[in-house]
Length: 280
Image (cartoon, rainbow, N blue to C red):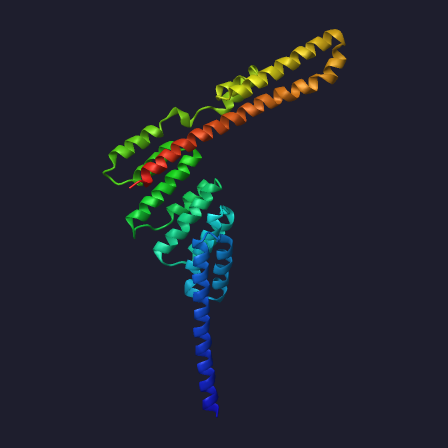
């Protein structure tokens, strides 16, 4: 009787393990279908369920897949957490690089360039030339984001094959463009302090510059007129606050416009570099 009971327990345990394995496989297959269909939130929930019920050897790959769901939704901070966890438990070099490279992408989107550089310098890519190229491209992207264009050039060149001389020369030319540094936000700021509206015009926003100058000189004329007609006390308490508001807002806005314009110039140059390196 005891032997029979042991046999039943053993058979039941084996069946339970088999059924659980089938259930997890079904969960993963369903999650994969939802991911392909663009239902990333639902796919993430199913991958998380598979993580809970699945075997320990599948945790790394499932964690990366869960991170992919959040990455596709541009939830970079949440995706980074999953990639970080996966990179700490995965032993396979290829899968670990996938986790760390995707983590770096998330960090880049969050402007955490130094952390991304640290992770990339500590990942092994000897198993694949393609992985090495991808690593160098991501490093170049980090240095580009930090404004270190010389170092960015070095890594972008390493992301290319030795024979791609023309592309390397094009990248060198792009990274020497004056548009990377212009317009200068500080220059625009001080220009608008000295001559209201000039900083915006320097940055290429003529409408904003003319509007800022018109408001400044308009309120200045009103301030002077009221000083002579109603006295300086009325002028100071009635018009001066508005004059000060538009004057301060003018040079502050000039700096923001210049910064946005410079970032747009950099983004345009980066897109050209991206297409050069990734076209094969």
